[in-house]
Length: 99
Image 1: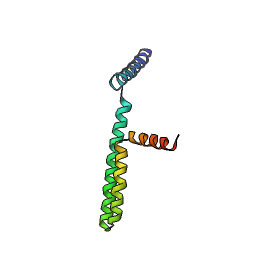
Image 2 (image 1 turned 135 degrees about the horizontal axis):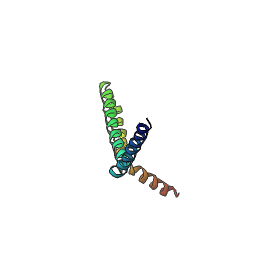
Image 3 (image 1 turned 90 degrees about the vertical axis):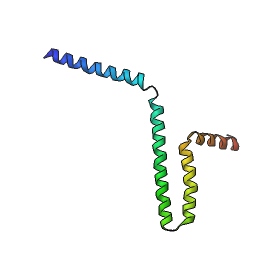
Image 4 (image 1 turned 45 degrees about the horizontal axis):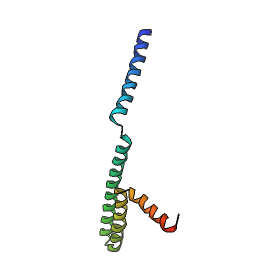
């Protein structure tokens, strides 16, 4: 019985070590990959939301609302696709006001 417990503990330790080793070796840039994936998913969710809003505006024949939706939706999609531009924009505003 003691031998089975020792083998169980050994196999659990071995599996945990191999998992950690594999995670460190094969997925060294996992944070970057997850961030890129999340940004891509958020972009397409925003595209779908924009299309739904445009269809709603078209059904109501609200062309001014559709134009405003396209304008703000385009700006939103731009910043989702290029998140580093938000930091650049903040830096430029801070420089303009003298911070």
